[in-house]
Image 1 (tube, rainbow, N blue to C red):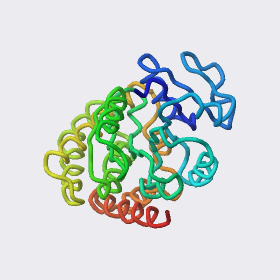
Image 2 (cartoon, one colour):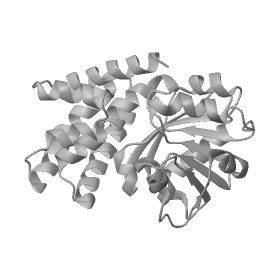
Image 3 (spheres, rainbow, N blue to C red):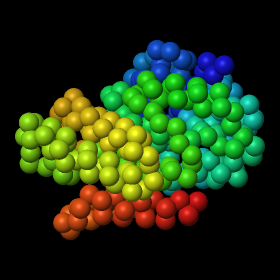
Image 4 (cartoon, one colour):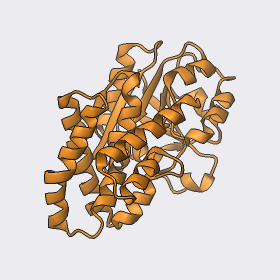
Length: 275
């Protein structure tokens, strides 16, 4: 079951997923920008989407939200009824995908930046035609990239603004701090504040603790391992017009983390309604 996995879109997260699972599954990758899949070891680079769909049992859609509808239009004409569809696009609901593709198994995943080094936090939910065992499989896959949390879909926008955008908040708030100050700030200020915000947007105390702690520890690990300055990492998290950018605008005006999270949630809900 699901021996062969395809990944459409080979940006940072598509690459991270590939690296995390290629030792355990046969992985096929495709990106319309051929340069992204050059010099890629341990995976099969598909010539086109059709070739990939003919080979794989499950396919991870790792393209940007603005490119998502066009991709669904492209793949809906091929035989995908027996394939598991996994989406990591922010704001794209399982219902939106089912509207295009029909009664098909769909899993929605929201990983964050530290998944690139196996220290991520990924939240998951399943569509209405998806059997529980398919969700178990996808949870296993994303555990190779860090911690996982299974949610009802109505909490996925909240997950996006807590753990998905969380590293962006963290990197903004630690600007100018040294290593010891960063760890003290994380423990004494950032984790308690993010945990409180997570509870405010609907997570249980236990879920909020996991989301805040894993997001913080993963962000620190990624900072240390990458050697990239916090300001540059912040830019990598904050896509134009997205949830993180909405939160950072609040922080830059001197607002609290809780106010920033509320602004990010409003933006997430606005983006979801467009789809």
